[in-house]
Image 1: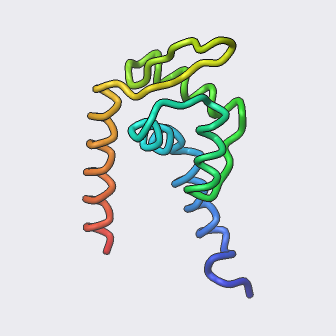
Image 2: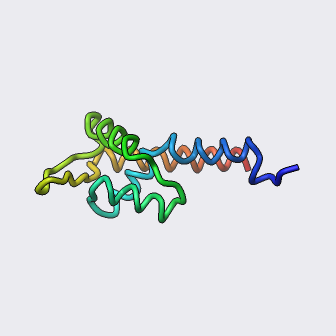
Length: 106
């Protein structure tokens, strides 16, 4: 019998907290400094232990930008993304929600 960490439940839990909530990781990193999409992906892998797909990262960044949570500036042939004040507010609300959920669970 596989260990708890190898169970389907735990693996699904990790995916749901990872790729499916990619926006929260992107905003958390952009809160520290503006960045290119490629650098964001590598930082997510280094800091959070999973590597989002190229397309996934760009789709999430596009959606965040279209909703006003991220701004984009062209820097030569690259785009530099920055968190907006609304993005910072969204991150604060997400943190409160996660803290409340953890408190209720444990």
